Image (cartoon, rainbow, N blue to C red; front, side, top):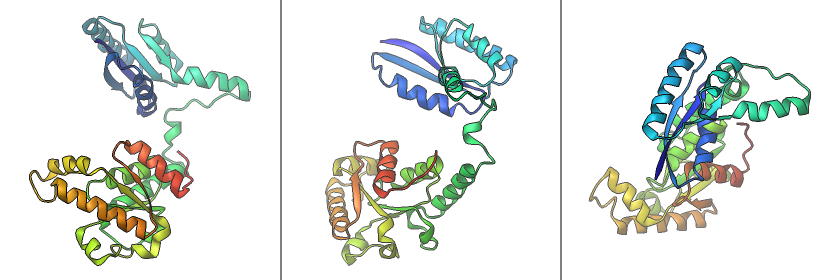
Length: 271
């Protein structure tokens, strides 16, 4: 299987280049991709150092490198374009046609999509702080401010989904574990019943849950397949009884789960 080095190059964080780059190369399973992020390429000197790294990778691979770039500075962009590597300039591909369509000169500034002073940025910070405080049922106070409250058994994916929703969309997300004591009482934990409209459940295949729990507590009753079968069945019964919307997270990525939550709950947020 051929190996190709993919460099995500940006004069900002490189997150945009890496996100789109990942989506593109995921369609090509016949190649092994070595992925390198090169953020903050904002001077010719840094670009020159990066070119040496790219050249070395091409020598090791026996193939030219792939450069996925989001570079505002056209001079630095030209340095990389002259390297002989295969270049995908995301800004050039989309910004220039959009400039012609809108008849406007684009503002060239690094990090505009994630502006520190923007309302969206402040909303994301507030959402992250809220989500960390309300992780795993730590606090009941302030749930009226939550946009959504995730429920499900331990290790079903509540925490990573909560943090993704907060960081990417500014969604204030709380999450609560459903534990055996809740099933014995046949009641939702804490004060969740007061916020039923905000509840959204996650479930998972018992065998997958057992494998994940084995990583945390090997050979424990907590991780046993029989216990995982019982907990997931009781959790699904409770969610159905309480009329809580839920999805199966077994084969879904965090991004897919978060998107389903946004769609099902009807939360509108800007990126």
